[in-house]
Image (cartoon, rainbow, N blue to C red; front, top):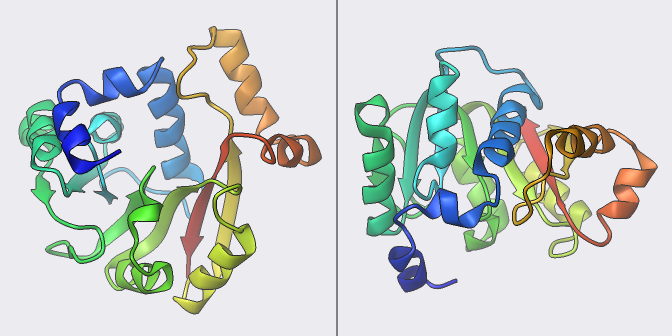
Length: 206
């Protein structure tokens, strides 16, 4: 999708992009907190390519500080409108933007492919991220081994990953959503499923 397309769809992006935004983003928010070193309330999450701030809304509600950055002015405007005074949102490129102060966690969702040089991007993020970097990874798009090597070369020596089986474009009944979350922990079955669809969530720390 081009920047112009993102701009045209910025209004209500979260509601349009996900069949069940609340369930999908709540699971993502829970894993941002729990995967890898656990976040404590009051710590800051720095969300690169934040879109309209849908994830930020949930993290703020959970007691975390949040700062969003997006390269599309219309998305920044939409995120600022969604979050109001509860969190700042800035315009910037994820390859270059540096937050005003170090943050506990940096997140990058549905945007890692915007990194011009992935290893350099990981080093850039590592310079201001104190606890962990969390991002999603499509193992059919990028070789997992290559991404892990880039993380380690950038100084992220502790890496945890978990399959993420919450569908984006299908709203699941509550029992089915609970089953999807349970299947993420099913080991070999989860790895087989990832050959065909779904993504990993990766948490990298030092």
